[in-house]
Length: 317
Image 1 (cartoon, rainbow, N blue to C red):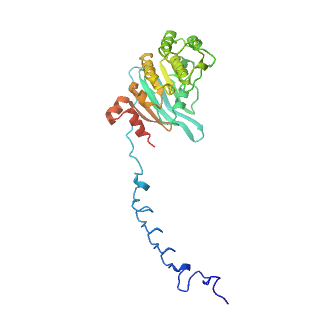
Image 2 (image 1 turned 135 degrees about the vertical axis):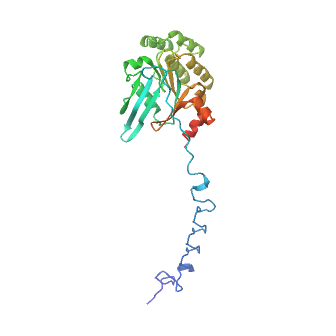
Image 3 (image 1 turned 30 degrees about the vertical axis):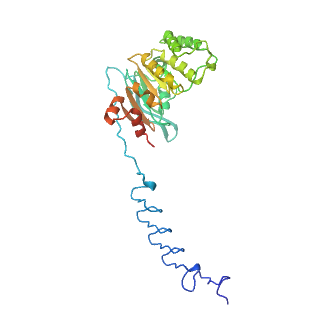
């Protein structure tokens, strides 16, 4: 009976000499002749090295980058309280869940006092907008509470908080003058003269309908309306994101010169480099939690870097 297959090799998988087809030894070696004991198919040793050789694996990934950056030092120093009575803004164990098991805010504790310009900073998805909406009574927390002058968001807090949302909410068919009159009727602390002065300085025509204005000009109008109130807390969500760089300096000067020095401005922005010179304090939020609260000057002195550079270090990917 024939013991070979059609090519003449035994059916048991070995050549008569104990080798596989093509004549390569099977004891401890790969089919192409490379030893299998501690080595990769191309002949590089596997003990402590990457497959292509020369990159040690002891604590180092491919290409030699360190596996982890050193953790930056984080500062959490609440603002000193300068007077008796409740704080201007207080968040106690504040939590907001949109989806079960995932918190946009995660037991956030934050206190802000009067007379400060504060930068509310953090990457996308950190919870900044959720916090702002809860402060303004647009969202209800899942757990915890927000207090403004010791009171929960409601009719009273709307009378002392002036809010600039990120998106334009004004009626497009209205002209600028009609919007000023509307705000003057709605808010007792609105100052029409201040609004007209700022509009003139920025070259915004008061008889123009909002729908005919550019996106940046609409945002200027909205900011002017917000800053023309004598509020105790101004909350500005991306106040200079849509305006041209030439107008940013004026807008920042407007913010500085048109609010009560006993009031507080909370500015949420990604343009840290443009605003950090006007900030007294900064608050960093990450994954819904407070990770940094300090004065801007202390960050500069302690780390010898700008707030913008420190932010990039804390939130480096």
